[in-house]
Image (cartoon, rainbow, N blue to C red):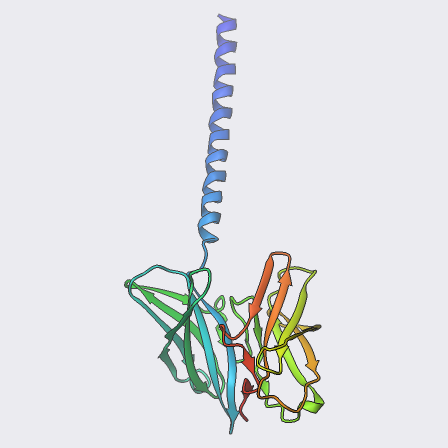
Length: 251
């Protein structure tokens, strides 16, 4: 009788432990599933932006948006403030190009005196937002999901003083190589020159820079930026059109 009671107690303890372990295991699996769902890739993101006009207190922006979705009906908007958060408006972006990974790039332009904006994406009746993790984007943000971009600078009149190029890039790895490939004769010949680290920006991206010594003739001048990191090689080439002497901020 005593032996039977002991056996019953041992069995009960074992069953209790099994149930407890089962609950822990289930909770662990639930957390893993929730984490996996939370890490799902965004279907829309600000890709890059630049200023192309800044005068008399007004600033005009180009914003490129990346979408990763196979929806048949897609609409992309930039939701922006016009006057210090008092008047928010939507401007519809137009399809621009498709990247090698199949994602689409859309382009919108707008003007504002103190820009803040977010991206709104409507696909098959569902609405998705990229609002920079609740902070909205400001006019100073040059890069979103793009690996690397060329920053628009002021018009550089005298090439004898050099032509400055700034690359803004994601900090994918500590070891990186950044260079510009350029031509002054319409790609009959080309030259590579390394960029140097300049600063780390508030959002964790980096700015690298170089000053090219060019001849006075700039009609055939074009360039693209290459960024090599641990996870691959990335190019900023103005979506295949390359950058040239006309890529500047009009002031």
